[in-house]
Length: 408
Image (cartoon, rainbow, N blue to C red):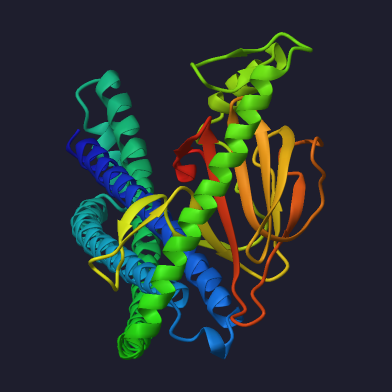
């Protein structure tokens, strides 16, 4: 009975450590997946930086990209640190498991040696028969014969268990070596990422200093950008107001607006509007290829001119040359208009609109019905800076909404 309790205790111990190890591996896999995603983000940002020409050095957009890259690099290092902590925990758990297994093996060996010593006393056939025949009756003789047989089988089982435990210990030692090698790899990766981070932070400081030296140029860039944003917003609002006015005057079909002064919709447009709303958070990105959001929705204090606030009614997405804009949902192209550097396209989805600005050419015409992910045009690449930027908005009636809350 004592032996059975020891076996059960050992099995429970092995199972416990196996569960701990499995849990650690699951966490490590999650952290590794996050680290790979962050490295892909860094690679994408680096590609965007590489595409900008020397004329774009010290530009605000370039500095934003470098800042994004630094944040992603810090995330990678943080994830590596967390992975190393989990590896250390695994090493400690394996060490504890090995100690328990080796102690259990020692005790089992002692019992096995003791059993061999006992059997040596009854090793000869004569001794066995004397032990059997010295019984008081036939029933006792039979029980002694069965005892000798079971004892011999028990010794064989003990020998097998000792061999099995030795193999378990050997496997655990190999696991320990593999885990330590994994830790060494992670430490090397952390050292490499730390070196890259220092280099990127040095570049950021250098470009920030050079921007400060060009204070007048910087202020002019900010002033022009703010004016362009305000002009663009007024232009979009005039176009939307014109569409709303036209819808209210259209007597050819039955139309009704959801709100007073809003866009008057047909039943088909109302259904489209409801479908669009139900896909909040699941809309595809408005372009193909790699990208980075360099300016987010809303009013922000400028990072270099603290007295200046800049308001964005959408998001500005930097991507690579040759990238195309695509519709985020099915709808109708209601307006194609000219903006500085190219074209803008408005796609109506009932009383919702998606707006794509800074296209060098368009693939669609006014009045065309488009499907989700249908290509709308090629995004303009600035020949002087090499920057390829899409301005994207989502609106309900005239109200600007945060696109990031709608995109998947």
